[in-house]
Structure formats: structure tokens, C-alpha cells
Length: 284
Image 1 (tube, rainbow, N blue to C red):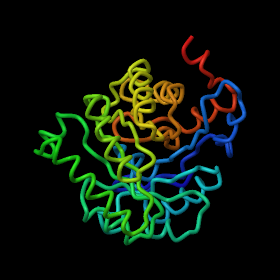
Image 2 (tube, rainbow, N blue to C red):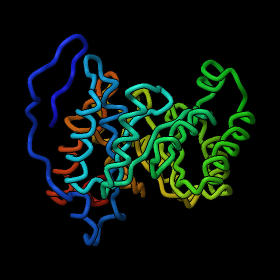
Image 3 (cartoon, rainbow, N blue to C red):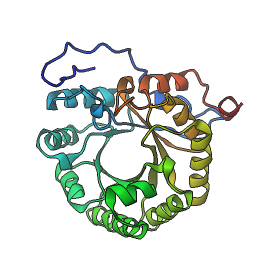
Image 4 (cartoon, rainbow, N blue to C red):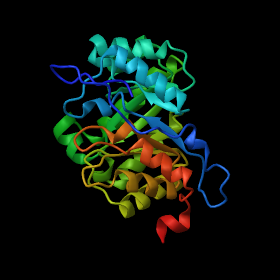
């Protein structure tokens, strides 16, 4: 893994374990496995939010190429709306011509989405505050405003022929009925995949399983899981989501990420390699 540029100094190259290549393909033919896994790596976005970690543009390009060599389905390259080196790094990654799809993270904001379009990414990811707490205190808006703005943002990106995915931020504290309403908006506007995020890292596997299963059954959309590790549950919660029918799993190299980190790619990949992702073992 490329070196990290820690605030104020350069560190020695980081030493990491060798990651299984193409591990997301291992389980596709297992009769007990609920479906195809698509790994979205967010090392360059959420991973860089860990305290003390700052990647240079060069670091990010090298990490993206390394992730591509692992056959990662999608690389979440960053947040172009931040501008400066962040936007430039996303632009350069998108220009590498990698096999992995390159996505960029955006707030529920047309200006954010335009910044991502400027970079030439393949996927526009729109993050939607979904809990009433975030809607009231972060956005200072209403549920109806959120749904209307989501429709506007999706249409704006689709008008330019971009693939769009939508993330439900703070979803584990959100009302299930409202999540289903957001799914309905996404489905009606042609979005095929949504992301269920345990933004604060407070959920347990039973909660993740029940909600992801409900979203899958009632929406018909592909569901992704974005788990944080504040209570040490990121890996377990990601596996529970898969058992419930999720298709996409967010990971980071070495599990780095905001606060306590995200689902560790290496550990998740080893679960696939050891072929223990089947319904009986997950729920027994």
C-alpha cells in the first residue's frame, strides 16, 4: 500500500498484508450464497477521514491502481466538491482508464454533482441524510424537501447520462417507512442501487439483517451496506447485510476510516475465500 502523508510529516511506506485478488468472484457459484458480491472500496474517501491520514495525489493514484489490480468492482475516489488537490486527484484517477468503476461522493447538492461531472467519473453517488435527526439539525429541512431535492439531483445527473447511486446517511437511526419512501423515489427516477449506511457505527447484525431484508423485498432495488466499526461490528454487519440480500459491500484497506474505521477489505475477502458466507452459518 502506498505511504500515508500524515499531517505535518511523511511516514515510511505502510506495510500491509497481501490481499486476495478477485476475491469478490469466489462465492458466485455456491448454492447457499444469496447472490453476487460487488465490493466498493472507499479507502480514498471515507478511509482518508481517519485521524492522522492524508493522502497526496500521487498516493491516491497508486492506491487506485492497486485496488484495480484486486478486481475491485468500484472505487469511491473522493469528494470533488472539496476542490483543490481532492478534485484533481479524482479527475486523474478517472482518467487512468482502470477496469474498476470510478465513483465520486456528493451531498444532496447540484453544485457538488457538477464538480463530480467535471472529473469525468463513471458513477455519481448522492448521499441523502435519512434520519429525522439529521434532516432537522443538519439540513434544517423537512422530509418532503429531502425527497424533492433527491428527485432534482438524480434528474440532473441522469440528464448528463451518468450512472447514479444513492446513499441513505444515518440510515440505522432512520424510520423504515421513510427509507422505503426514498427507495420509491430512487426507483421512479431510474436509480437501481441504494446504500444503507450505519453512519455512527451503532447497529448490530440483527438490526442490519431485518432492515436490509425489508428494503430489498419492498423496493426491488439492489442494496449496499456501508458499515462503521465504532462498536467493532463493521465486518459482522456487512455479512448480515449480505445474508439479507445485499449486493454491494463497502470496504477499506486495513479497515481505515472515520473514527474507528470501516469494514476491513482483507478480513471480508478472507470470509469469501474460506466460503463461510452462507445463510445457515450466518444465522445459526
